[in-house]
Image (cartoon, rainbow, N blue to C red; front, side, top):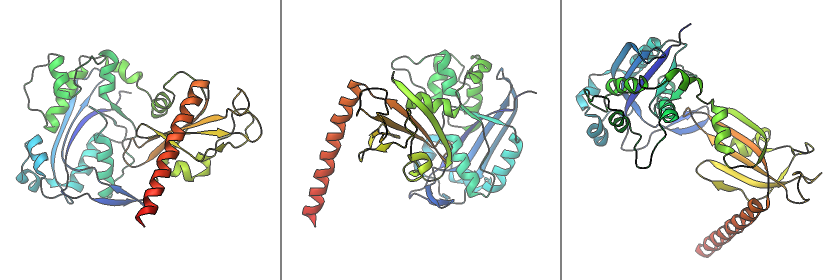
Length: 330
């Protein structure tokens, strides 16, 4: 059975003030309200089979933000005469079909789509499968120093004729299809990592002895990885006894955390007694609504232990200085 591949692009409006909403008991910030959708259905050779284009009339951010107007060329009149957003989103998802696999240039649009579907009381569980076509492109054309990854820069680099404007949703989607026709799209999609595989690659980047990699999906609360014992309590890789984490957690990058744990029953590391085990986490909110938490144990070596002690000492000093400052201000 042929795959139902949908390339799509969104343009969305933003407000002059943030808008928050309640998603199953957790406050979330709306990334943007969709005002234009462009989409094409393609086969696995990126031949265009059908197209979809629509302007939507927003309900929340009704006034067109000046920066959005400048980038997209949209006017307030375009928004005012657009199809009501609930009706338009419903029609788009029906056109896509329940088995659609979505693809976009980047990973920005699916989270916005899912937030908007939820706020319109539509099924935000779809799409269940989606691809970042930048990653498919980079598989065949590794990025060189100084090269941009905007759609326009890649279209220029690949020598594709620029016969349509950019920052128009349907036009951008057709350009994306043009790029895909120059790739081995079948192979690129077949090699595309699952979310778990991508999290493993991100969490276990450097060479090392990593064990017990596990991913926990579907959490709406960002700090559930600390609050839920199912996620926070990690068994010793050697004997299965719950590890005892250090009081200090260090942040690495934007959404990675780690600490050094000790096993009360054994060395817990396969190394010299007392070295412990690093407990590592990578957080991801790929769909814009739900958090996934990847967890693993890493067996320490002398270099990583020395780095841990240095960073831990610095963190304790920052905490001490902050506490002293707060006490002095009282």
